[in-house]
Image 1 (tube, helix red, strand yellow):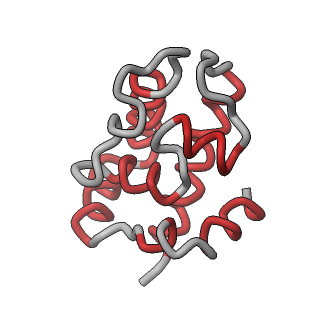
Image 2 (spheres, helix red, strand yellow):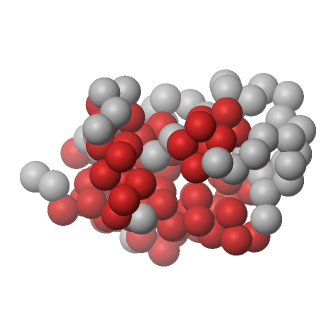
Amino acid sequence: MDEILYKLSKSKFRSSFKLTKKYKEYIEEKGLDTIRSHAYDFIQKRLASDVIANDGKQTPMKGHPVFIAQHATATCCRNCMYKWHKIKPGVKLTDEQIDYVVNLIMAWIDRQMIEL
């Protein structure tokens, strides 16, 4: 996780995403277990299928801390997932790939929560 998070931090676009105070408060209120559950739900519903009609547009740019984390970690669409993580589009995600994506999202969120 450290290596890919470091590479993502060097991208001008990916590194532009930050959790606002509002999102951090939401995470503190809900707890990390709930946020992880939301991440699994979003990934399974929006990215796990082999065919995604609106790929590239399925992840909002705001509205939930997981959405922000998805853009920051290049797990927002299957094309970004292929470019950064070599997870091929057009193929249903495995349970291991879903776990990888969620763990990456949560690692990014954890780092954001400790930043001032």
